[in-house]
Image (cartoon, rainbow, N blue to C red; front, side, top):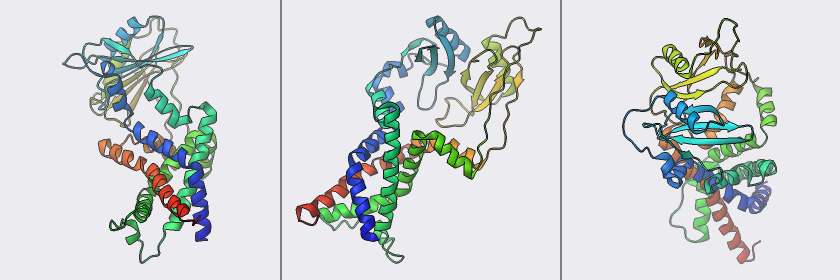
Length: 358
């Protein structure tokens, strides 16, 4: 059985090796996506003035004046990773991300629709192949799961020697050292790699994945409440009134996001963070308001099931948007390990080939 696992591990690794390296390196780089964007477009992410934050309404008004022919859909306040305001403006055929100075409320510019960072994202998400590439990505994630399972089987040294097998014998040289690194790096990161592969399969096949999760623990759905047109209301409240109403309902929070109503009965949504700037990865507290009256709307909030919690954590776990800089550093280093495993595994295999031990 060990030889069978070794053969499967070897050939799946050789066939999927280039894919593993590409996904590993691009995924590790994207852990610092916001930092890459700030480095590539400093004029969009560098405040031009010092002072207190501009009011969200001032930001919204300035963006609306700058884009009179487009619809403002929402605004995000500065975060611990992005020091400027961010807004979204749309048309039926376009979606534009706009950055705004957090103090002067001056529109700094648009995030380019095409850039090397966007290409890096597309390469990681769908291998530059759209939906077909996304499905290939899902198959690649399945191959990584096979390598993880067979790798653990091959690695297992028995109950008495397992701890020694998790360390690198630095006295080894050449291919033997590569083998030590391969074993230790694989076993130390196998759980994270399994998590990334599993969540990657979810992104590739979301409907099937949700069906599997729902079969184990039923998923609940939360719908945003709808605004109710009233004949007694002649003029809907303005943005400032709506946000002030939300602040009175959540006096201890800081406005982190404003989402404008969509459709005839859409609700006005204000989301609050615990502090400003908004901590990256923090769960925001929503306040829904009727777009016609400014009164609070109650959203249906059924008790989340275990399946709901699992689905909710898929994105944060995959990209490491929780736990601050420590988690991002761990995700970056561990994210490079699949590439290290391929290089060291290939080196061991090639050494055997060169000695006639195919």
